[in-house]
Image 1 (cartoon, helix red, strand yellow):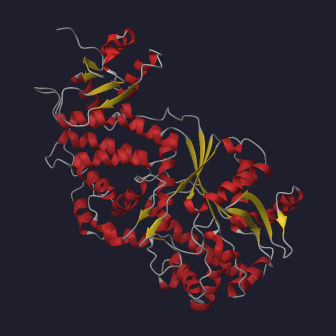
Image 2 (spheres, rainbow, N blue to C red; image 1 turned 90 degrees about the horizontal axis):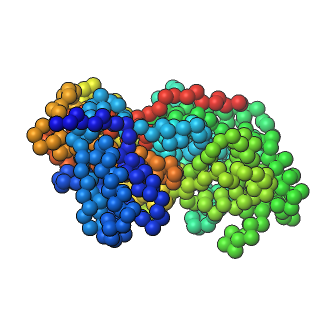
Image 3 (cartoon, rainbow, N blue to C red; image 1 turned 135 degrees about the vertical axis):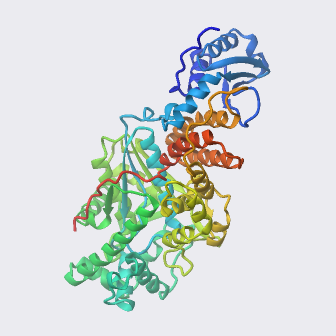
Length: 576
């Protein structure tokens, strides 16, 4: 018998086959490429064409020859509208061997965006409360996309802009003065952001409900627009006047929330490289207002309110400055951040911003306004992804609501689940329970397309033991249950069917990741990983070699979604 050809295990099979079709450069010769969807069957994959006439054409015959000549290919067949191919056992076995050793081989993706630079803006929770499940959607998507971009070879800066001054912050100050005066979380043992959040919630719930229709563009800041003479307004005036006692208390409460958020983010495996806060741009507010008025982009009412005429029938005016002269969140968040990004992000290839769907209209107006204030090319690299809301009983999760569910509480409940501890006991070494709780908690939020909303129930969440998060945790624990060593090589009848199938499915990893970074939607990649886990768990029979292969596949998948954590980067400290 002739010596077998040398095997190239670091080429991606799907891309290799696609290259053969593209090389023919015939736009009418369209095809899709698929890998076997079950463990059975002769063909490992196929190219599908518009009709069966493809194989009678010169270009079709050429393609058959090109695929048959690939070193990975053992045989090809022309069947109806498909060109099917069977891979050489030696190629599959060699690739499985690479995975057993922990090598990514053909799953390597660092070349996709090598040399590119991205900023990903997410998180952005106000410094008035603990993080609740409503924030979890944004954290899962933003951190997952950041990790996917890094897996593709890009340099990524994760950044977060949070509101640390305004009506809500002063409501937290007022609530602390009324209900928790003198209390220190360091002495009581209460998590600091939980303490401040309870002050905020207690104060807000005693106020009249003046919130506007949730469907209105300014619903997220509706309470900020109301002129209310109360203790919170008094604190805001004193803060603006620079009163030392108020500034000291503001810094203290803000630092408590930032500390509490950092602890929660650490449990979720989320890191932020650059923290920014609205108060850092106080000295720019007046300049922006003057510039907008001078250019005719802003208008001033008789009462002193400043707004922007949008030209939209359903949202004619965007409020920028209140009657008392204090900027609204639109001016603080969007205009100031937008101007800052235009001045500092000229050398990046992409700026990706994740925010809730409730900000869609306001952000669209602000982008247009910013392009008129600071014309340039920034809009070409600015990508906005709006995600659906997390709802409880059909209503948006509110930070001040009595039914809010905190992320810390969800992680605690999941971490105490006996099913999780039983799974962990089977692993060697035993995984950190926070890590497994992270998989269970983030999985459902990460594997749903951003545009969809998520109805959340703590009880239902724990009951769904076949949901995406539980599948990720179960698969990880099963693959790491114990070290079995290297499994059997090629035997009679070829490589074992389930190992072969896992190797075949690994070839979809690059495609899934490339689709995710192209659309800035990490759920594309997450659903691929979840599907792989569901298949892996579908057969309870042990398979030492399959476990070894799956360890590498799961490590690559979870790492590219930010679920294995990240090397910590020193965050930019507060300036004041």
